[in-house]
Amino acid sequence: MTPTGTMSSLAASHVYAVLPAEDLSRARKFYGETLGLSVEDMPGPQFMIHAGGDSRVLVYETSHTTAHNTAAVFLVDDLPATMSALSSHGVCFEEYDMPGLKTVDGIAESPAGSSAWFTDSEGNIVSLTHLN
Image 1: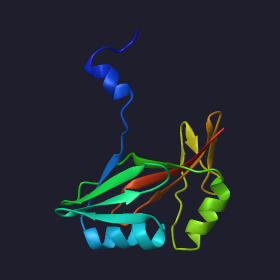
Image 2 (image 1 turned 120 degrees about the horizontal axis):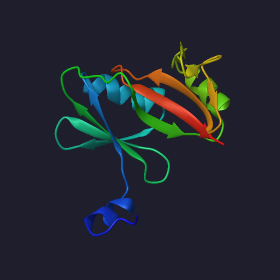
Image 3 (image 1 turned 135 degrees about the vertical axis):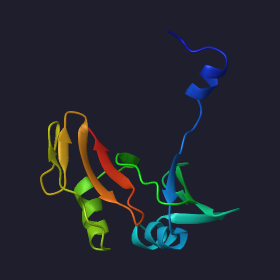
């Protein structure tokens, strides 16, 4: 089935994630200094994170509304090296052991690739993923 009309324009559209932050200045420091990403101030209580290509994440200030699922995924070429670099800046990777998801040294393997998760300064769950 081929999308038509408005739906077909969505198939060609870019998309970006949106994350809540209870403390915008703490979040800006985490993404800009800890993760080393480019941070652009936006009008209002928000900022935009820029990553590879035209990848973006909008972070906006709000009361605590953290999700309990992966909110953003960064695709990386070398997962262990990226984890090592971020660990040296204080990022702690999660360990999971539940049906369908088990990490070893922070990394879960699947036929599609490997992933690791950490929480940002606001408690949002972020993933690093290397696709096979």
